[in-house]
Length: 390
Ligand code: ADE
Image (tube, rainbow, N blue to C red):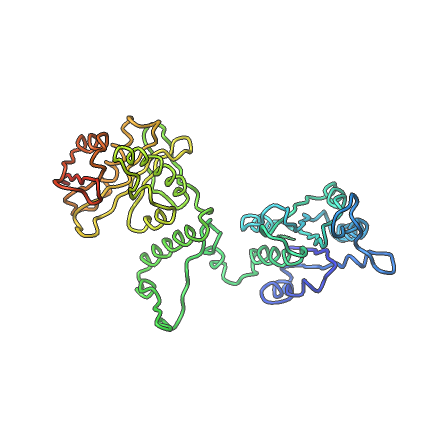
């Protein structure tokens, strides 16, 4: 791959001589050329900037040195490069973009400084070559050079032969939309911290499962935006799917909305589902399995289930909720049955809890075979209901 970098600070690109990228250059896998824009100025001060038309703070890069340098770059090769313009106003640089760029034969980077490059430079270039403004992220750097270091490294390491162990490219953060799992090496115990035992077990299946869970948990905690809300449709039947971290904000809103009615019938809004926060729901993913149902993209129903923590033969179902406009269609009943069907072998009892005065819920549970337990339920103002599991 050929890469040309146009800049007024060629020394900024020196790190591209180091490490794997430097080796790739020496091996001829990467033909990287850095061009000093000031070489294409014609005044004594080698001026590259001027004040902005229309006024405003700062300086703008003049078009002439850019035009001349780009002309020289284009004339030095066959075809035209794809011109990337680092800018906080650009398209977000991602691993997917890195992969696309790694498939191209020739990239050029236009490193702006000051308030930016005269817009006509990009228009003129776009008449001859593809031009893409690229942003590293939502923050402002002093110029494009640091972005070029990042983009060139991310792209060049995907070129065949640049990274020795090609497998290490596959199991990486962002390659499949999830963050990487944590890694450990020797010693197995350090400062009182032990490597997770599963990694020492030699059980490759268990290790793979543990790593996958770690990736999901980590992505949920650090980058929930990467976890798409689980898909699901209310077409022929219900598509009941396990909830992901990405479902939780909507789930919380549905929960609050559904339990307002409960609060009203109970005469108190001091009830756990209304006091719960997003963090509580995130925490509940540990221990409970939550299922959701979507209709036309909207989260319309949910339920959760788990083995009781103090009686390992009782399966608990909770937070059964259905959006008010879809009530009465059997969705709640289907979700209750779905939770019960997830109970492991050995379960002898199903358990639910609801407001003592929630007539509608009580009717649904009775119809599903649950019987009221004597006395107050697990929470004040509630009752428990149980059903034998056969
Ligand atoms: N130049 C200045 N800020 C930048 C950013 N966030 N990404 C890419 N190039 C930049």
